[in-house]
Image (cartoon, rainbow, N blue to C red; front, side):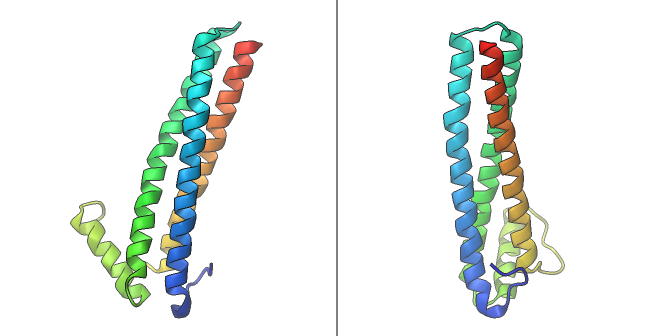
Length: 151
């Protein structure tokens, strides 16, 4: 993917970031849905030597998992918006359509100028990095909950 999208790569870049964001959102959701409930069940069924610490860490893992799901919803919205952009002939009209949609849905005010594709991609990448960090925190808290439970 190019950092400064050239006109020839506009449609490719839109489809590529949409594909990556979709894969990222789904894989993070699967990890959260599989890991966190398993830890909570283990901590509840097999209370160990540090039940308060185990429960606290399990709750932290759960809170991270909920945040991961929320970010997934944002990423999937971005997927839809990049897919919408790709249906337009150029970056300016595609960006304008996305801005118009977000303003009509009352999700964002209509900006005075249309942001370039590179800024939109950078924003999606930031959300993907945040989601990855939360997934790491969730897994770490889950592992520590299990360790505290069986210590």
